[in-house]
Amino acid sequence: MIVENLNKIKASLVEGVELIAVSKTKPASDIQTLYDAGQRAFGENKVQELVDKFETLPKDIEWHLIGHLQSNKVKYIAPFVHLIHAVDSFKLLQEINKEAKKCNRIIPCLLQFHIAQEDTKFGFSFEEAQEMLDTKEFVELQNVAIHGVMGMASFTEKEENVREEFQTLHNYFQLIKSHYFKFNPEFKELSMGMSGDYKIAMEEGSTMVRVGSTIFGSR
Image (cartoon, rainbow, N blue to C red):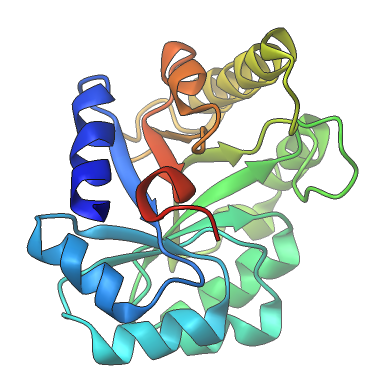
């Protein structure tokens, strides 16, 4: 069943959009099933769960940390994480840089923006991100690579609200690319869209969708 769901989602993707199968709270056996069906990118939002799964599952899985990340937990995932989606402060970025250096790695990251109307979601405002990107301290970080931006739309039935928020994030992506990463081909990811709104997100330029319940069933 979940393989069937996976294939349906893949068939609905716009060319060039990557699917991150959000496997949080799901057993390793489900991930293995999808791995056997060809899926390689999986998203988790809790560090301990991610570490446990990394240890038991195939080593060529690309693990994406998509949830809020506390600075004191970075060290546990630094040796192997493929992409950290939710970088929402300079303090966190400094910590990722520090731990990446210890592992002799450059860790790819996305800057998370607060685009939703709900207060509960984390993320930079555009001004905060600009302020950070303009600092000498940011430029001196050698062991992180900013590959793009990420955001979550409001949890609402109103499609026009969701669309507007995705358009806002797309604008942020373009402005930041043109101002700070113009000559950096790595800065190309716009991670937005989940089970309920990924089709709208793709229409608004998403390059990476994070889909869980539509594949695995509701939690």
